[in-house]
Length: 222
Image (cartoon, rainbow, N blue to C red; front, side, top):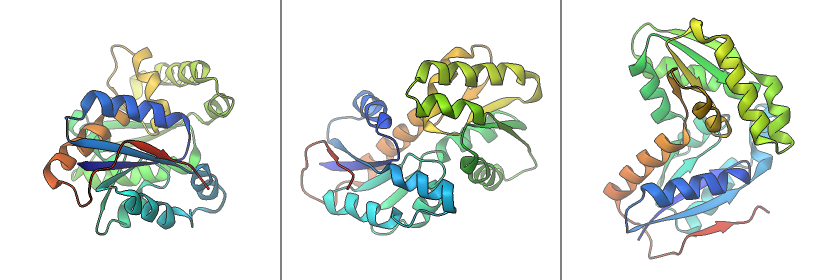
């Protein structure tokens, strides 16, 4: 049984990614989830997440054959720590789709620490001249922190509508923003969770297991 591990920085993401995994994964793949909110908090405060390597090692020890880091702020660092087990940053499949979709790409983020890593990934992925447009929507984050996901999605969607003429494609930089895409018909709006799970499932099916069977589970934060 191949196990795909997910490293989250918010508990709310566990249900989202479990549902996507259940929908997209064929028999023979299991999922494993670990949540550590301090990783994002540390990265926002200091620019680094010293606990990241340890959390990735926990997932490997628990049986993960491939790991998806679902936090865009620390995704590049997590991906760089790939070793015996590969780490997929959540936003890489989305970035590949974005550069294929248009030349003017707006990056919408609700957390400041996510903006530059996403822009850097798009520059790396493009392989050609593209116009990258930072489009911060930082005031929406208060709704996420308060647990009001409806208001969060609405503020993001209103922001995108207000700048709709500025870009060919809009990238929603964080997993938490995916719900806003459904509120924006008629625009090319890309979010990361589904594309990342689809890519992880594809890779997991090819690479096969390193470990014996483990049942789907969630590891508690320390």
